[in-house]
Amino acid sequence: MKRTRSRYLRMGGAVATIASLAVVAAGCSNSASDPDSPIVWEMWGGQESDIKNSEDQLRIAQEENPDLKVDLSMSPYDGYFTKLTAGMSSQQLSCILTMNGQNMADYHEAFSPLSKEDLAVAGIDESEFTANSFDLMRVDGELYGIPWDVAAMLVYVNEDALAQAGQTVPALDWTFDDFDALATSMTGGDIYPFAVDTGDLQWQTLPIARAGTQPVTEDYTLDLTNPDYLASAEWYASLVDTGAAAPVPSAAESVWGSDQFTSQRAAMVVEGTWNALNFLNNDAGFETVFLPVPAGPEGSLAILLGSGYGISSTCENREAALKVLGSLVGEAAQDSIAESGRSLPARLSSQEIYYESIPEPARTEIRAAFEASFAGAQNWRTAPDWQQMVSALQPELISVFNGQKTMTSLLEQMQDRFGE
Image (spheres, rainbow, N blue to C red):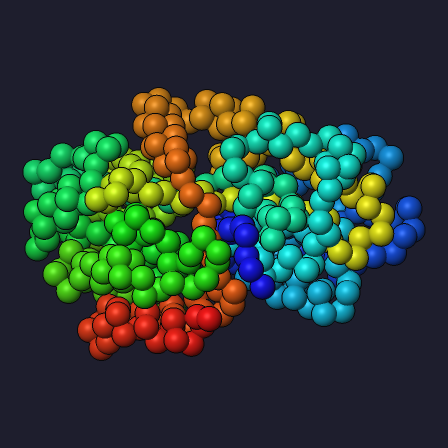
C-alpha cells in the first residue's frame, strides 16, 4: 500500500517509565451505543506529572461537556500499545485514543477517519494549529487524529563542560563542520564530547540532517542504503571509533544518551524538544544550551514530530466523542499543556503560554532553538513495518558501536529484510 503521509517516536510527548497504572479501571470501551455510558479517553503516561497533566485536561473536557460523563484511562507508553493491540483484536476500544505520528500508519485501523463535518462538530479549525501538523495524523490522505503537541529534535549542550575545555557554544546556524571541530577538540578530555544512542529518533536525527535526506522516500519506501544516508550513518558510528562518544554497553540501556548527558559524562546529546525543561532544570546544576541540528552541505534538515487524539473505529457514541475530542484539543486544554511545560502545544495560540512559563534567559534561548528547528522541518516518514524494522535494528546497533559489525552491513541487512 502506498503511504502518503508521515509519523513520530520514543515518547509521544513523554516516555512513561514506571509500572502500569490506570486512572480509571477501563477495560471498558465505548462501542456500546448507550448514551449514558462514559466517553473513555485512553492516554499514555506513568510519571506523576503525566497523570496530573492528563487529569487537568480531563477536568476541562468534563466542564465543557457537563451533559456527558468523561473518563480517563492511562497506561505507560509501552503498555499503551499492548493494550491498544489487544483492543483492536477484540474490537473493544475506548472512544478516544492517543497516537503519535510515527505509529499512526501501523495503528490507523483502530481509528475512524475524521471528515470536515466531524471537525465542525468538534469545533476544530486546522488553521489554528501548527502548519503541517495535521499531516502527522494522516494515512493515505485520510485524517485520523488531531495533534495535541508538536516536537522536533535538538542538540543539547552542557555549556559548563565546553567552558572547562576552553570551547565556546556554537551559534544557532552551526554546521557539521562546527560539530566535528568541537568533537575533535574535546576528545580525550574529562568527558566525552557526545552521547550516541540507539533510540530511533535519537540516533537517526544527525545522519538525516547531515545527509539532507530521510531513509524513507517520499512515497514511503524504505531507503536505508541511499548512498548519502548510508555515508552519514557511518559517520555517526565513527563517533565511537574516534573516541568522541562512548559505546552503548547493551540494548537494555534504553535512555543511554540522556543518562550520559545528565550525569555529565557527555557534553552533547540529541533529544526531543519535550526534554527541554528537564534538561534546563537538571539535578547536576549545569547550564544547558539548546541548539537546532547542525546544517549539512545541503542546508539544515530538521524533522517535525507530534502526537494526537482520534476517535476509535468501534465508537458508536460518535457525536459525543467528537465534542470531547474538541475539548481535549481546545484552547483551555492546550493552555493547560502549555502551562505544565510537558510539551509544546500544537495549537498556535497556546504556544506563547508555553514559552512564558520558562524563566529568562532560558526562555529566549529555548524559543530561538525551537523556532529554528520548526522552520522548514519535514514530517517524519516511516515505511511499512517500520516498528518491526526498528525493533530488529536497535539491538544490532550495539554490535556496530562495539566494532563487531559495520553500520553499512547492518543497514544493508535491514534493507534486504524489510525493504520492498
